[in-house]
Length: 370
Image 1 (cartoon, rainbow, N blue to C red):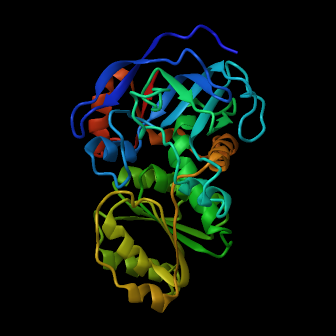
Image 2 (cartoon, rainbow, N blue to C red; image 1 turned 135 degrees about the vertical axis):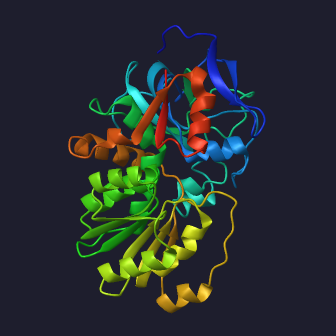
Image 3 (cartoon, rainbow, N blue to C red; image 1 turned 60 degrees about the vertical axis):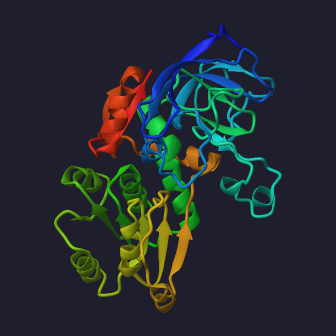
């Protein structure tokens, strides 16, 4: 099933780290594999990981040149044989909007024995794979996208706008995956969220809706902490006006001297990790999501042992997490002001400006609109 496909798609290509991205004409596959889809991209929001990749300081392998961007939502314009349902079992047709996942092979130890497809050793990840090889369109800052047969895909609810669906396809699915790994949030729990970027703000909302008695968001600047309060934070603490000791003292005062039941790290700064160990109570949980850079920090392993901490690393998320993120926005969008996170909208021609502003922390969640 297909309409008329153009021969080329304009896309933002990284050929050299730290250099301006190149706007290039990239081939659009004219033959759609069984199980694959071609989409006309509506929006692709910018993630901190895009900036790390662009600057060449990711800890993950990148096979240049690549099309930048991985938080995309698009409209199906062509369908390969057998692609008529999404990963949740919902029917798909030309014209439907979808988000789509990185791949997993389904045949390695991590996929089959551990059932952890995000750890697949043969995964193909959008934005990381060389765009000079078929099917070329494996990045989000492109007029068209290709959903490979092995990739999960999830239909977007009608009441979720493109900008929020795009955000859900990475930032929010990473948050949902972290909460799945954490497990139940107890109604008497205090949850501390480190970071007031997109992931931290979304985690604030999920923690509160999940029933936590108290949610404390630590971050900066004040404008983002205001959004955290609107998303459900009972207490916000600025890292710009407090020291680590002052932040610890405040958390202890809120928890009867025990510390947080769960600390969730979304800050991305290595120093936040060591601080999080202090903020958690004895026997507490520490979920680390934001540490994908190459930074290092000294820690005292005895802090983990003496407190008997449960430490969980959470990476990415598969189709279940995408679906949960989209459903959360669909269900709670009327009373949680998600749109306040969308700081600006840019055209593809303005991608360098958008990336630079994101790099300089002048944006929360900018979006490239097509």
